[in-house]
Image (cartoon, rainbow, N blue to C red; front, top):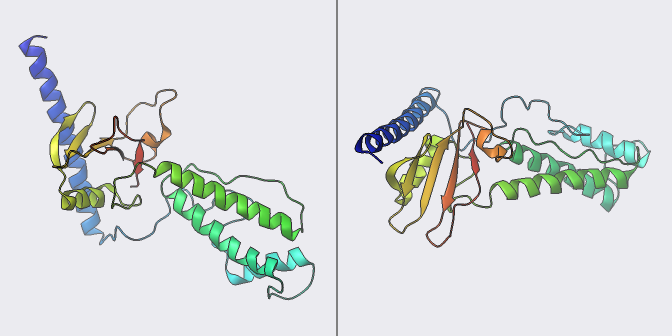
Length: 229
């Protein structure tokens, strides 16, 4: 490789790093102006009406209506242990859906068939939604950086990584930067690719950034972790 080619590659790499750092700075400025709280729980835009047989965010009146439909008698109080379980289960499924949608806006709840008006059918439906949402969330967060919250945006994540001792090591191939800890751990933060290739992880395209973490004793990087906007 000629000296000219080497220098050109270095300049391109430096430019990619500058682009990422500028993007991080812009996010920080916008967050500061908007008095943004990065710890606040948010649902991604476009998910105001989530799919699935039942909508999330039910109040006590809606739960009572479900229980009334299930047991075929009037009244809004859960009278049996199974009815009480359904009441709690509706909330568990809602929380699980809200959590996973913050990392995967395209996730959809399973549409299981159940006997209309059946208490046990309703229970099976909500269990399926809760379990599917938790399984997807666990998959997406298996390789997150220790002592970080997967719901953090890129500005909060970068700030916390620096607080842990990570420092900018070098720009990476593509539009990204590599942060390295003195103990050898690495975090590669990347911008969303401009082109979607077949069979590549969809997590790379959910938001403006994603990252991959590699602990010092791992042979390779972990899964792609989406960074919420």
